[in-house]
Length: 430
Ligand SMILES: CC(=O)N[C@H]1[C@@H](OP(=O)(O)OP(=O)(O)OC[C@H]2O[C@@H](n3ccc(=O)[nH]c3=O)[C@H](O)[C@@H]2O)O[C@H](CO)[C@@H](O)[C@@H]1O
Ligand SMILES: C=C(OP(=O)(O)O)C(=O)O
Image 1 (cartoon, helix red, strand yellow):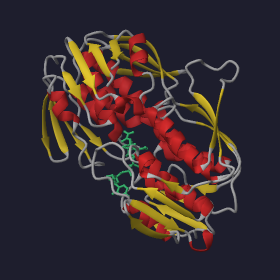
Image 2 (cartoon, helix red, strand yellow; image 1 turned 90 degrees about the vertical axis):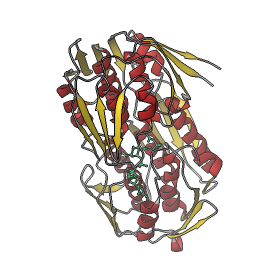
Image 3 (cartoon, protein in one colour; image 1 turned 90 degrees about the horizontal axis):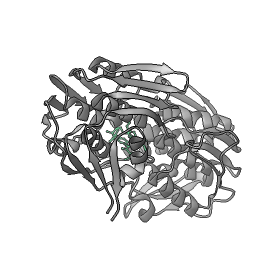
């Protein structure tokens, strides 16, 4: 199995390109199931999760065409892929394809809306909590679907082949359930109102793509989204937004190692809460025409508490990275996670570097230490894995990060991007 080897202690300097967002690309790709016509996506990142979803979509009958870059386009820019679902040949998403990734379950809404039926295995994804699918099931039932759970599969049918719009209220905010109900409602008969909807930029990216495909949607970026169903959708072309989690991750890396890096293509508007916290820790952040610059001198990292919550608050997908940063602060910071009940799996691994962290329910108290020392570590999920990379970059000596297939799910060319900024980091194969 591949590993990442890091020799810590170098500052980061230079330009680091930000890729298209994994968590936006995945639902956008699924939207291609809603129409017979081609959907073209620009800036699709080269990631294991994208590859896996391509396999799932191909199993449903989607043809993929990866196209060259457009003239004058940056060589670092992501892929341009056209997805054509002229005919859906299979409405089943089997366990073998769905088990590794949460987002693969989301095909259920689009298949049900277009074909009137779907059989989808219960999903996998990062091990960060129980992650049930009850909001999806209740939401689809509120759109008239009949749902049965059988042998680990969710079997869904729309009576008379078409869903019926209506009010859907989520008991708590869910990004995935908002994506799914929004997609399902585009082709339903009548109007759907989603209350307690997610406001994440990835939801807005999907909603705007659906509008470009002919959907009638209002309220994107608010807690109430209204979707007036239409008979059919058509093809369109959409850009995947820059990855705000990748942006925040590298910003935290610079805040920890020190240095001066331009995160090229980053959209600071999607990261207001975490950037505000980062500034309080002592980093200087400035918006530039082509991205976001982060500068940190050798001064102390201030200990600042963080409350993790839904967008527009501090994202849970940056919690582990922020905790890595706080391990070197000049005081004690409390990080409170309110989204997932078991997202502190990185704590034990960060402690291998010599970090001082005490977990108390949903809170982690991180007491800064004078120095981290390189270690052998591994993580059980994607963002936890990258928090170990950040700690390794700042630690003294050698760090080996094992089980890096998690990193490949969500970080494009991680070791290449970081080594171009001066980090001593390499992939060891085998
Ligand atoms: C591929 C992708 O975009 N994944 C992101 C998505 O995951 P995902 O969409 O799975 O996360 P949700 O927003 O649904 O989860 C929020 C909370 O709701 C709970 N819940 C959710 C659905 C449900 O049916 N029942 C239920 O109880 C979850 O267990 C969790 O406690 O949003 C999370 C929260 O920002 C991010 O950490 C993930 O990176
Ligand atoms: C938790 C994540 O992914 P998933 O929802 O696919 O597990 C993530 O992107 O951090």
